[in-house]
Amino acid sequence: MSSSRTVGPAVTGTIGAAHQSLGDQVYGELRERIIDGRYPSGHRVVERELADELGVSRIPVREAIQRLETEGFITARARRGAFVAPLGPAEAADFFDIRERLEALAAALAARRADRDGLRTLRRLLDRARRVADSPRRTHELGSVHADFHQQIVLLSGNPLLQGLMAPLDGRLRRLFGLTSEPGDGPVMCGEHERLYEAIRSGDADAAERIARSHVAGTRETALRMLAAAESAESAEPAATRP
Image 1 (cartoon, rainbow, N blue to C red):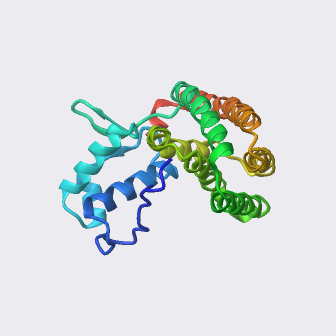
Image 2: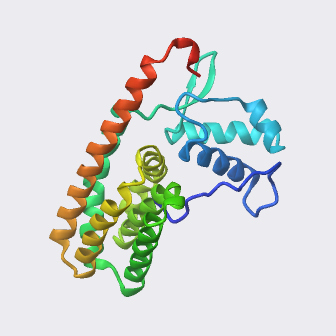
């Protein structure tokens, strides 16, 4: 969960006008397509097709695919090509094992080290999440807003090593939120975030750690249940209808 998170440009034709390098732009766009679900698990990423769509050579596309493979978003299959990596119950369980412990630590450190500016930012993110949760037409934003809140807590930890460890998890968290968030989740999630914010604001590291751990454990249960249901439904489809 790093503040240097790359956000892919909104591609309407070709890319190359932004200040980022071409390779970074292709990487950011492809990463966002995976995170927001436009490229679901198992989607085949074809260098030539993506290069033609974005109006670039195959070199930055190949580099982006390799970079995303290193980060766990893409998997390469011998003689078959590159595919979006699966995110099912097994993968999510491994993710939550790490996230529960690191986020609890981040919350405890944030309670000890957060300054006024950082707390104001955290408060603004919480208020924004409530506005999104109260607007049925904006439910697609919920996952991103909740991820921003968690990212800010990691920044408030003031621990560069922890921030570096959490950075590769940010995209996976956003992807997971996108796959498992439902409209009715907003108020519940905001309530849990409110309690976490108050613990951090009051400087109660023990409470912040406990609330963060409980919060992640709760989202784990819901996410794994939803992913298991989706996996079961997919396996029940006739083979001819699968991508």
